[in-house]
Length: 66
Image (cartoon, rainbow, N blue to C red; front, side, top):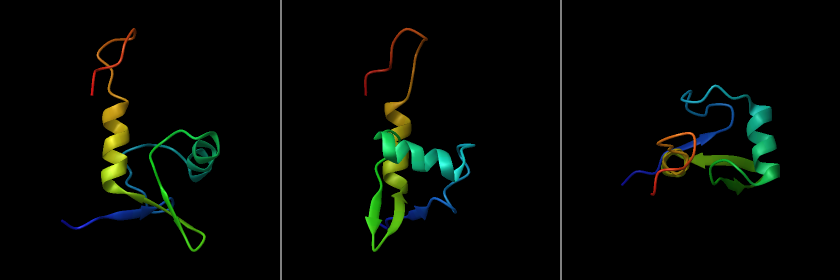
């Protein structure tokens, strides 16, 4: 299985968030898991998809069980 990586600049355009938002999320400990290698931040597609699954909601009152 090929692992696909994105940096914060070439991240998938599935979310309309800025690089600054991704930086803030990392500082606050929210958002998808990421790698930091040699000073470069990378996001694995599998972690992006996992984060999206964790954010699924079925109503405004509760989250979907994952």
